[in-house]
Image 1 (spheres, one colour):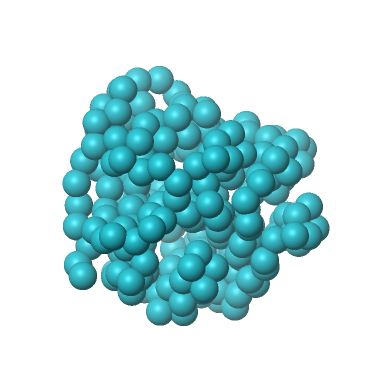
Image 2 (image 1 turned 60 degrees about the horizontal axis):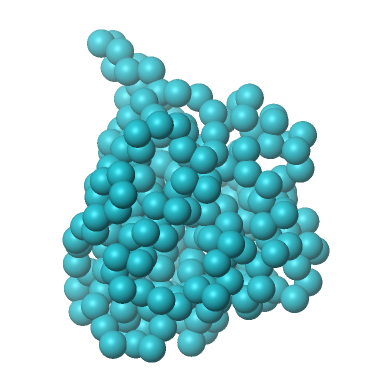
Length: 265
């Protein structure tokens, strides 16, 4: 079954999403990394039609979703995304988040335990306050758009160097182009999602999650240095450590679809 697109209305605008319709007992919701969109789940969703319904939401400020009226917090993102989930008529659901999406998914599951049946996170953001401060200083950088188009080079550099250095799992030119376009769509406010995440107390939310957990990370992922810490914080979680980087969902969609299916079914 093909992946479709639609919009739902929330308080501050419209949320754009990709979905696969179906009659499964428990829907699955996917939240993307920064500065991507629901496009990063397209290939995986095509392989999970047996689990439908499936929904991949564009976070406010990204993809086809509205731009927030002010600088958002993770609480704002979570509230807006939950409004979209409600508008879709979804009650209990499985939840998968990647990087920023993992931070938002964790907070959503902690705040609304009755709604989330199972939670999988790729690249959990298990940082100390000192590390969050360091990331705020180095990674929260607005995109300066100028007539010399230096922002195009800057965006291309970012999307092709998203993993730890040296890069072991580089994106294809087509994948990097898609990611660059998504970053440009987010524009001069793409960094606001990073600012929100690096102000979030992710470890506190992780400790509060009540549902079954799957923690995932690739050895080339920029968040891999913190992965062991997340696993130690939740010894009850299932753990999947990969030979992969941040683009594993696009680079190994069949494998990842199988792992997602195993956990959620």
